[in-house]
Image (tube, rainbow, N blue to C red; front, side, top):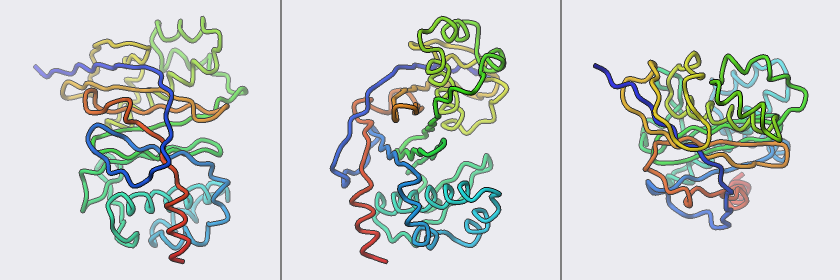
Length: 258
């Protein structure tokens, strides 16, 4: 019999910021980078130079210019971050895709990364274990009540409806589920209801998983109107070693090269 249990352990944390960029990752840590996309639009021509032909074509297929700009900024910064972390020239950073379309570095598969964006904010996560990150804008105009039964269990729905801040609670639970989906790389959209993401831990049966999964998820504030979540295999990461890293040094080096 296939053991298809998944255990989720969820909590909220306050991220600490480090000004020291040159810290090598180990299996107990995760590097997070957060940035406003609008802050880097002035670097679009330079960041676009880091994209290959297929990536440029993808950027050009976006109907709205802001979506094209977002892709160029996020992909360019991701490549710079990966190059810095590995210690290679950025020209060597070419992303491949698994069968599930999750990108990876063929010559450095042990380095895992994930990107998420919402409105004007983006998050990039790096680690030496499978991980997923999600950020959402706390929209006050989105009527989430109607979709609750399609993605949340009865206890989760109750947590949202009885919360003092219903809007933030909804997005906290939503980002947790999205981060788990991205961390596993599984097509489990139909199983979102089954994945418990309330604070604490619980075993549940999820048919989409072919082996026992122990996932840990942490929620954190990105900005006043944004919330994020990071998912990874439980026991592999020390929560105290999940830190925000600066882009200043990275971009300073990049500007000196162009």
